[in-house]
Amino acid sequence: MLDRAKVSRATFYAHFQDKNDLFLSDSDEFFESMATALSRFGDKSQRVAPVQELFGHIAEVRSFYNALVSSGKIIDVWELGREHFARGIEKRLSEMPRSSGLARQRRCALAQGLAGSLFSLLDWWIRSGMKMSPAEMDQLFHQMVWAGCCGPA
Image (cartoon, rainbow, N blue to C red; front, side):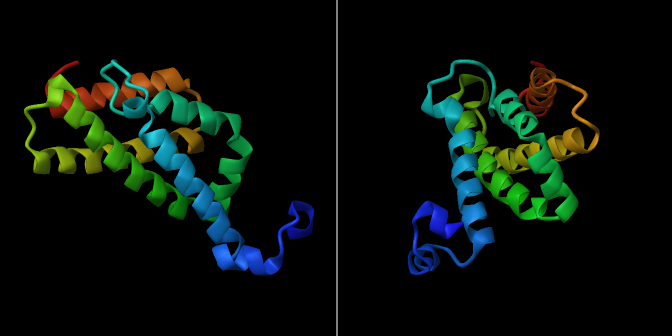
């Protein structure tokens, strides 16, 4: 693999411990980019996370994620995702007039809980065969968000 990429072993190991480290590094970059997408692009909707986009991506690479679930390696990936999405959701909540009255500590706690809920939904969605569309999952998640944060949507 390194030969095809024209990368020496010394160069690879100067940056990564092993293949898993490389994979987690790529996952880390993906989740950071995804979790902050709404804020970065100035989205004006009431969404706190790009759920439809995340679930849509997972659907596109379904067999890859099914293999991660089967191997048990998904736990590390989900943990990275939860961390990034908690920060992204907290930032998003701070930007939205609807949730601007939340104290910082409450907003942080809600963001942690919402990120955990998001990844729990994602895990359930994969394991149950992805029967609901990414748009339906986005709607379901955001109904939970606004019912829990600031009353009904």
